[in-house]
Image 1 (cartoon, rainbow, N blue to C red):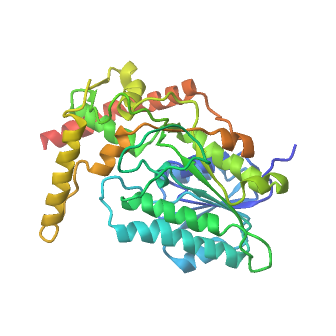
Image 2 (image 1 turned 90 degrees about the horizontal axis):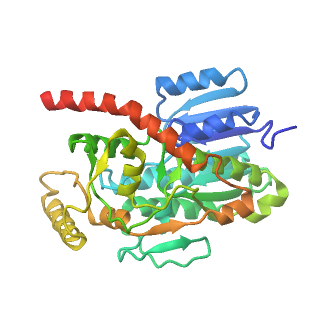
Image 3 (image 1 turned 120 degrees about the vertical axis):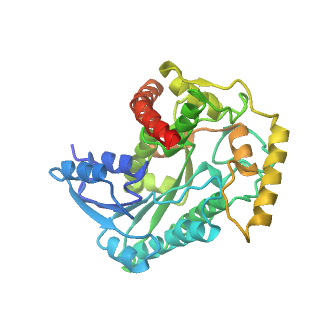
Length: 378
């Protein structure tokens, strides 16, 4: 039986990243004519992965910057499908707003122009739940969907950049290509993504090791969210690609966005970390170090201090008001519309996701302890 994407040429941006490489792995099952993997750099492990699959699929490595217009034009020549997963993620204000906008927004807009110029008909954008919130009041969402109206004014640069990029992608749907064809686009909004290799999980793990194997309590127990496993987010991209390239199903999803979640239990971020690590002997603090209103006030004072000292010294705050609201607001969204329109259902069960991630944590734990102990000694 011929596979849905058989014979197509697909470009994946951010291909060597946490999510991108999982998308590439699934595309290698699809009998594509060519997979083009684009990123600023490639690790030895990623290169080995690509080499392994060159026997079954043509894999082309494209090393360059998403801000380089000429590079993007060359990347998109004779491409049928673009999956745009490249992005800079920043929740602490470590990256300047100019850089965020240049990569996440202008880079996306330039990639869309390259698609129009090269007659690329299909475009999938990896967005984020942060394009909708939570808002500065911390208004909760318990069963969100794509029809929900949520009042939010995004004040943090990362969410702004993803929102503007997504708007550009959805607005580009229906654009006439250079040869007279039509560009069809859609956007996927994953929840917080976890799994093997997550930089955020590794950060929390390091903090736990330094805290006598106890995760810091950063979110209240009642602040329920629904994290999504990286393999299921990658699978949603494959299902979106199959739907976009099917003329009937494409009518449903063209120009639309979709929340992507799975069957991971609804927990606070801190309790979720504990769920993944408790069988390895990792604990979690029972409560926030200070009541939430007081923590929020401390963050406000630190932000003022950072602003005042900016002309003299620049430093990254350990937390800010945005991050406090983000991890302390109930924010849960359903994947029912993606299931209905693109036939997405999680490829991996919760128990599989948990076991895969816990196994990775178990392998990383002794390594990280050794690294952190050496840092202490030095």
